[in-house]
Image (tube, rainbow, N blue to C red; front, top):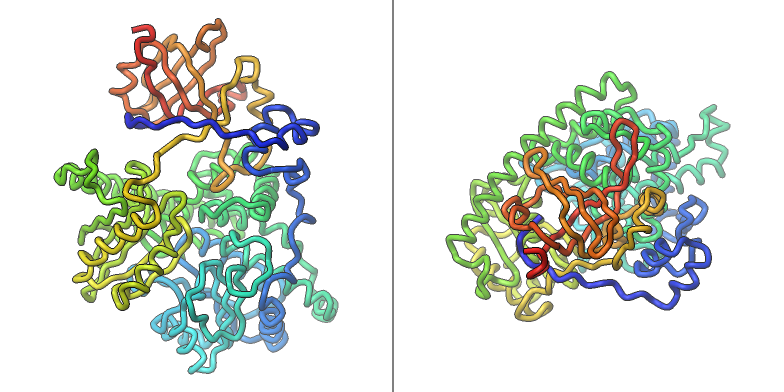
Length: 584
């Protein structure tokens, strides 16, 4: 919760809402129509609605490489990334390759603090100790020109599977599968790395089936749906847009997890997070499980997280999950300290409420933790609602930055434009629309600050876009029922690009009390009516709530509160403002 004013804007209702309302409850039709759903069958998240793997450019060449590696029992080395998407991608690749009969398959994930991101020549040098015949990258590689060249110079074949946006030049790998590469016809450009490697494994299984591999080897053909818990976790944790393909993958993974069909490592992570799989939603993966898995790569070594996901024994997975939980607690402490330092710097500059604050903001502290700068950038972006890049030292007179953006600014393309205008300014960069990473020489920071602010202003104008809350409208008391709340909860996976329903309205505060450290428990009455409803504001601005004694306008989510197996409707308050002159 924050005291900053945020306009509440109600989503316009398209005309096709009436068509949807013929097959969906009115409120569900209203919510889905405003998110671009035109037909109710778009909410049928069955696997047969996934586009075929044949549409992926390079998929045949990729399967040729993998089939040869299996036939000859070559050594396969999976090179992953140090975030949750990379960890789930790595674990999925190893699990499937072993199920398909690979006997010599291992993984290598770069340590963030020693080698940085991707298939670098340094990582190739480390990999040579494993004597791989084939390197398979997951969630990285599309920008690894030098790393691929180094591997091939050593006689190692390279298959790249990635989802990041490519640069002007592609690496000369033996095969590339990336829906964002030029000429790719796959309809979804939003898949996470784990979704891409899942598709590659589907294609490999299909080829092996056609070639009679399973019968010849006496191997049971695996049901790859058993790996959808990993696909769902990596997809949600990577905060990629939940287009229809990703909604299907996540929905199927969630359904399996709710039935208890999940790997021991994922189950152990649920246990340490205190979550029950039976009623989980996508937000549980994004806010409870993903951060614990990410903590390994941020604070230590992602190999720990991958070993947890690869564990087939819950007794072995539990201590690994507990270590991940401890690392996450450490990460939260470091993040909070860094956040206070960053906000203190803004206050010293007298810029936080000033029009002088750059529209594209860069912050730097040589002592900040490399593994947490991305989260810090996200927190500052949310607070100030403008693109933010947070830098810290990385050694060798270089600094690393992690960027987070706002809607209508593609941050990776913005960095590309800066690199074109200022040749040599950026040592390297890469990323997505909403998040990116980059490296600069320390002496180039001031030049980059101005270049970044200029580019952001060029795209967004002299002021950052208004930090509005998009509401699905007002709920009547008779709509705020347990049945409606349950329907919305499980209607679809909600997340990036397909946000959970948010409503707004005016209420009278009947009572309020602080629970925990900073949560406000409320009893509310709909304005002008007698009906009441429970509500809670998590991580609230307590000073703001103490001044709220009359009528308030709220933006809120409709939720189900479960206590001792008893379910009640509860509003989750996302924003509050006092109605001027009302009840005061």
